[in-house]
Amino acid sequence: MIVSLNEVEVMATKAANGAGRPWGLAQEAGMAAARLEAMGLPGARCLLRLLQTTDGETKLAGRCPILEGAHISDLGGEGLPASFDAMLQPLLLAPFLMQPGGDATLSWQGCAVDVTSGGVTVRGNSECPATPAEVRIEAGAGSSPSLRPGTGAVDIGDEIWEALGRFAHRTYVPATEASRLKGAGAGLTDND
Image (tube, rainbow, N blue to C red; front, top):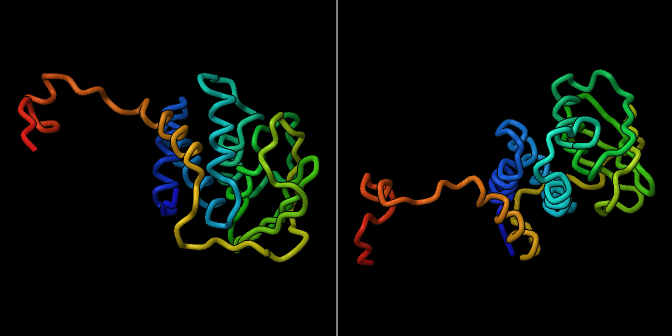
């Protein structure tokens, strides 16, 4: 399915909230997924796998790249190097490291991602790992970016988009007769 980056961000945000993330972290998840997709990386797929793995869990510290990435971003990159024993979908950390003036290398088994404010360079297999990975983040990128964010539409697989939509659907309020009488929707007579 061809969608805009804005549509990716909105869908990913709603899906993350539907999977139990508070709105602030859900917005961070949407940003991360869209920024990765803008560089041709599988942000939506990684986010979907994260949400499927952690659906309904509340203890995610040290495992959730969105939670840890927001923390690193809030600190302005202070506290690097950092390491995590069992990070889920580590590629989702990369957008949080894209800070002006700060370069970093994010690595896990079989992959290293050099991150600068202008983009990323991926060395190895950036596919979403099926199991939690041991992750290391070090200050300083090893190379200049080869992937830079684009602004066009991206192609998200239909199955990924539909699965994100199922999570997003959890955020919708069900229609009731009372809401229709107060003006929501077409009312009690839909004559279109």
